Image (cartoon, rainbow, N blue to C red; front, side, top):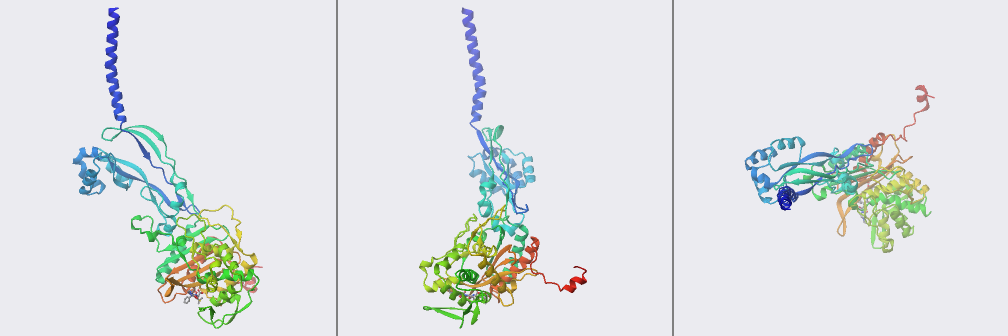
Length: 554
Ligand code: VPP
């Protein structure tokens, strides 16, 4: 019995000691477990490409150098080498470590090239580590800056399509559990909790080649006419896809540091303005729809002004007795005003509203403006008249371009898309196909010999379009010598494929008419874009037959 008891005592004692030792390790482990941490593994952000897969935004791997101040404090003698390698100055480093002394983690330098990070690691300074991150790179630079927007240092979309499609692009970060020692050193990767899920790539409707053409020509025109800014939008008439959207001055999203708020807003969707004469085609469309007018109906615009109650509206010259087509070709305000007086106000309002003027397009672009379309119930007689030639309402460049795409699509409005669409949408009818066709014919004459838009011509293609020169509104009136100069058009007129608006804000050169300032930009862009997109010419000079015979062709 005694020996049994003695054995029990020995066993118990051994167990107690054993537990103490093992527990110690275990408890120590637990102690370390006090430093059990979850570390985030960033996900690779999806690439943004144009409609043909050309890269527009790519996330490239970079490394960020971070330190555990508590640990680094023990290696002061290595700080100078570290500072040199990281190109930091010592005061900054000392101050940063001092201010974060109690913490385990502080960034020393974000987004250094992986090679430099390697050299820093090679110094093997205690407490200094590297974290793999991603930095956005925009190959097209400022050509597509406003469209894409940009991400912040943590690769989160801040503006533009980077913001609009954040959830699609961002992916899901992974996680891993690590044990860190008392000084916060990762001593062991305990387990990968979850692998990072990369973001999805985003293919846009944009054609990078067209985007570049528009950027180049708009930039040149803004410089040539010393304009304060410029905007241009190109839409695919059949699909409603945005093929190009440019603002000047542009900005380069690769150099985020230089950005100011008003620099990177996408004016084409955020800024609204009075469209002026560019909406006359829609007033004429109402006149044609109601049957009150035909293209050849005569209107007396003499003496070049029209009294409406106490107000008077004017043309830049007295066009006298002209037909409806000429009201468009010469851009007569009086002609448009008289049509407006002879159609029901609600029909005029309805046409503008159905064509999307003064309303959000639903494109999903962040910060898109709605604009203003005062209800006809609130119109005084003068409002009804000035509305007809584009004053008293406010639209964005995207809305106005979309309205011209309606004319090109035979009177049907289509949703706007910044992504490729598989099937051209049916859209909704806004006016009869007959009226849309008649208006398109008038817009061709506006670009012909008799019109104000001759500068928008494109060799080999029939062009339908409208000039606009709009005095900028100020509090309670209109500027004497500050204008918006515009041209909106559709090509090829016989089989419409592209709609484009070009607008220059406040040209300070010696010419300011829309026809002189914006028309040429339209012509130059379209003569490049139509060929780029393999769109067949519809206005080749018909060769005399004998020439064909000489060429040995039937
Ligand atoms: S005619 O077509 O674009 O080539 O009439 O700003 O008229 O009543 N532009 N622009 N008017 N306001 N209020 C002209 C043109 C030329 C016309 C247009 C084809 C030769 C062109 C205008 C414009 C104007 C205008 C007038 C521009 C201000 C607002 C009105 C004078 C430049 C008007 C009040 C000089 C509601 O676009």
